[in-house]
Each structure stands twice: as C-alpha cells, then as structure tokens.
Length: 161
Image (cartoon, rainbow, N blue to C red):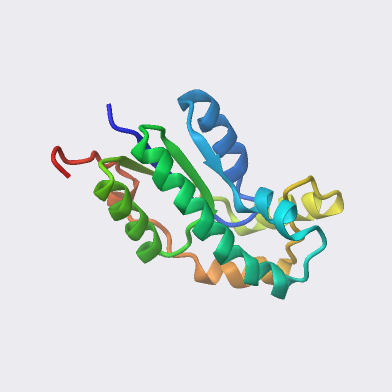
C-alpha cells in the first residue's frame, strides 16, 4: 500500500496539532510541525516579523524530510495550516508524483471559538506554540480559502505515477 501525505488545513487554535498527534499515532506517520522546529532552530520569543521570516525555510526543510519519508514508504502529516487552495493542490500533486496517496483534513472552527481558545492558549503558552493576537487571527481568517468538497476526498496514487 502506498504511503499517504496528510494535509491539515485550519487557523491557529483549530486543533491541527492535536489531530496531527492523534493521526501520527494511529497511522504510524511522521508528523511535521513547524512551530516545534522553529524554537529549536531559532530560539524562543521571536518577533512576529522574525517568525514570519523563518517559517518558509523551516517548511522547505520539512518538505525535504517529507519527500524522503514518502519515498521510503512512510506516511507524513504536514501540520502547517495550508490556507490556500493552490498550496494544498501543489502538495497533493507532489505526493502523487512520488506515488503517494493524499488526504486533506479541514478543521473548521467558528471564529468566536478560535478567539476563546487562543485567549486560553496565550495565557500560558505551551512549548512549540506562539502568541497569536485576536487581530492576527481575524486577518488570517480572511486569507483562508475554505476547502471545496472535492478537496476533502482522499486521493489515491495512480499506478505507474
């Protein structure tokens, strides 16, 4: 059976990392979460500007690890947020090119609930998480392209790809 690339889509506080941990255990998959790597590589208490600047290099490195794992037959979970349809489709195409299946999980949480969760999280930030202001969340919510129903259907790698 081919490995699966599992993509998690959702805003901060939606529960992506909680789901990623559960799926990693159930499916024996490699979980890649940038917020856990960034403090190790760049330190804690980064400004938002610095955090934004280091996220792309970390995700690039994580994708290189993901590619190797998929080639070796290990399923991978990208716990990234993946707010744009184009980005989600790009990673699904990359998975297919490697002969891997892909699945998308969308954590759809109402804005009021997200704001409550973030307030609680911000009050005592767990390791591997960053402070998110209500203003940031509301802005990012406007950037989220909600997945279409067909995006939520698992995709199987084509034989011979």
